[in-house]
Length: 168
Image (cartoon, rainbow, N blue to C red; front, side, top):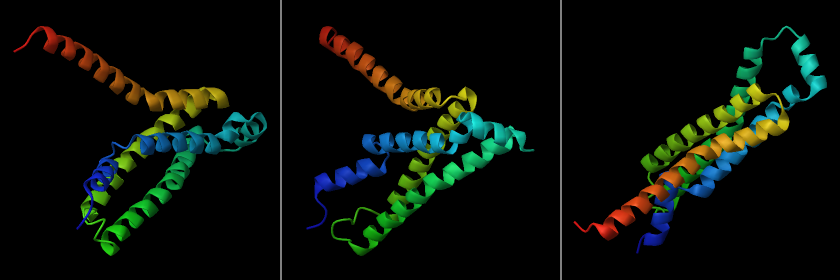
């Protein structure tokens, strides 16, 4: 019979990147990874030892940035491989799960990871404080979602009023 319509809609929404829980998980993991990799920077003793070495701040930043990207991309690559495997081996239920869908999902999630982790890493380097790093990382990662939701709410509010009173 093929894939059910509700199953396909779930996977289609997930693959298009409109999966809110997945985006929330990416943002949370980005903040936790950044905090874990920059913890030495926030710890006074470790920070004194690191800064006494002949290492530039830019090298510290790029080293932790690349390490965090590697740590975040390994699960993404594994998940994409599993999705492609399911699409090829279980074609009855996952027949709409093509390689193109999986790779487009990979690119969308890669962009989300890159920006979420980059923003959080930037907050950690700028603040130099563990708690402020966490708060600003969460705030700036949730800011696009908050702005989008508020714009949708205002748009719906004003369009509803316009449709109610002015019937064209």
